[in-house]
Length: 142
Image: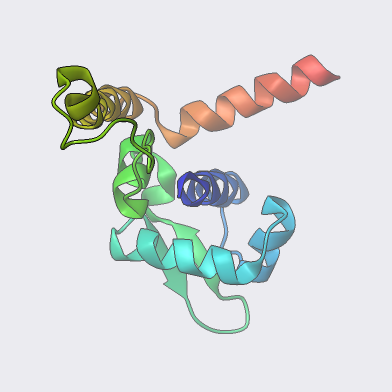
């Protein structure tokens, strides 16, 4: 589910900005979501090496390498959810009509290509770019 990508992105930018470890409870306050959801997503990010954990009183999650070299493709890979997908397909594969029988496969191929292009785009966006844009958005709202 794409919401996992959003949770990971938000948490990682927040951790990078904070420059210190944060618990899932602290993250949940900033993300406005359940700490259990955050722990599930952060476990995927830790497995992928873009988040580290620290035990103890001031423990929690920290962004790896201060977030300097992390791009959005890495987050996408960590949560491994397609950006564009359809669980519903039109037509009927057993139909004699080429359009009716082939559309489901065509749409799957199209969405695969669209995902590939989106993923290439994500490689060019770093966490620091997101943090910078968020600063601009805040300025625009003032």
